[in-house]
Image 1 (cartoon, rainbow, N blue to C red):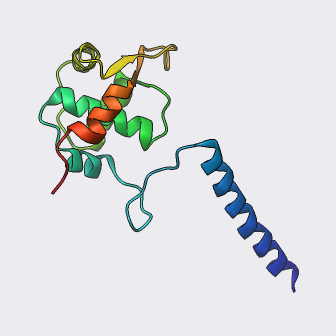
Image 2 (cartoon, rainbow, N blue to C red):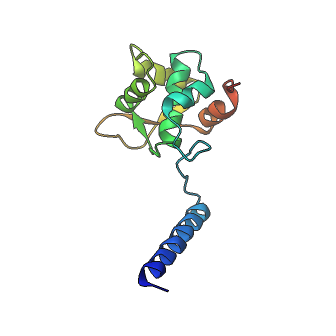
Length: 137
């Protein structure tokens, strides 16, 4: 066996071990489509079919937490999400967040992000996105 083959074998085993450790630790992996390509925010929005800006804000927050692995997000992150999804920006994103807070779907994060107020989804908010919004056909 050549040195290159040994290194290749070690790297393969190392990758396998990292996958197993991540699974055991419950670390969320980046979600992908069937071909292994990362699901875009636009594609995710199309599968969830939010009906208004309040639901769109919630779906974008879900995407940021679950697909971008953000532990919290701020208004700038949400605005970037709207732009990436090619959705018109709501006139007041903070208002849409506050409406989600009122429904129990979001809450203020313990720490600010980039010196701005930040939020996270609640369990209810995650469940609503996963189960409450209409699924794609």
